[in-house]
Length: 123
Image 1 (cartoon, rainbow, N blue to C red):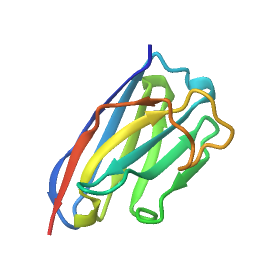
Image 2: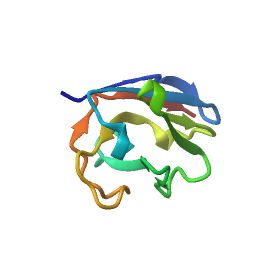
Image 3: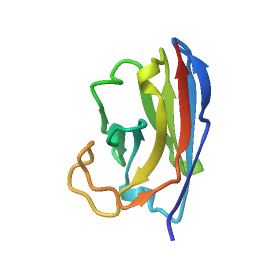
Image 4: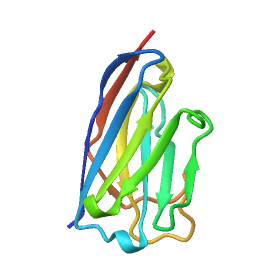
């Protein structure tokens, strides 16, 4: 049974930083594809960043140069460091993991999802 639990959301002003964490249990990191996705109110969910077991990373265009995804296999934890935050980064951020995948990118079909953590950026 795979369980993903996000933490670290909150409210900051534009230009600030936040770090998100995702604690994973029951998931095999040996051949992993994990990522962060977000959904703003009234908008569709969009991919933020993904990382595979080889350390290959994909970022969404909206966050390139500002966000950094990383993982600690020893701690079974996925991270997202968000810098220079903008009001348009506001939304619910979800951690996700794939059971089977060919290419780990923002289009991969994720099988497991956390409940999300809310990020609010004020101008």
